[in-house]
Image (tube, rainbow over all chains, first blue to last red; front, top):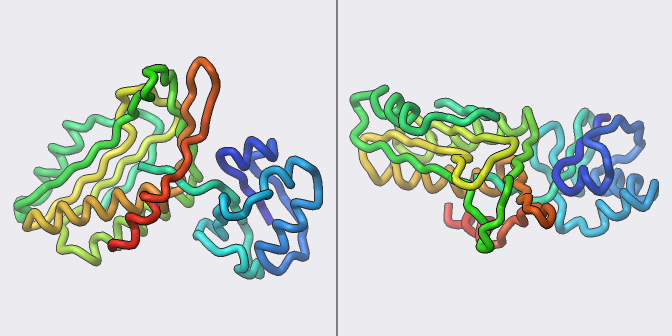
Length: 81
Length: 147
């Protein structure tokens, strides 16, 4: 699946998007997998309360299932307007 | 209903006029315009606005459609910019048209409250000394509960 990062999440990880093969069943499992990769991921995902997630461009919860999802996006709380 | 996400500036007067003239059945037009505010120190060089292409249009469309469902409205317009803006630049506007003013005012406030916390935009303030992401405010999240 494609994983997208925005704002300071993108800056901490150093990528706007990447393709990941994963067996994770939920967003939380995917986050755990990413955190274990490298310190920059650990830094980006250290505090989940500061993060939001969208699945196929719809806001979702961290316990949401990933089956059938093609695009996951992680970002800080939005500041539009 | 028109939702526009663009990098270029928009012409507030022309947009408001065209919107107001589109339907003679509407007795009330409310417009709101968001402007890049300088920092208290007066040293903001650039406000950089990032967004999530695809999701942004969907989220704004959904918010506008919900406003049309909840209030008696003629039309809704949302324009939101992204990219590099300077203090004084207009970031975004919403306009609502309704037969009566209460619907137009309330729907515009609803649009703004949702757009602040549910449309995927992120602002970064850049000064000579560095750059900071604008943090979401608890009040903005709390504002949603009144709807």
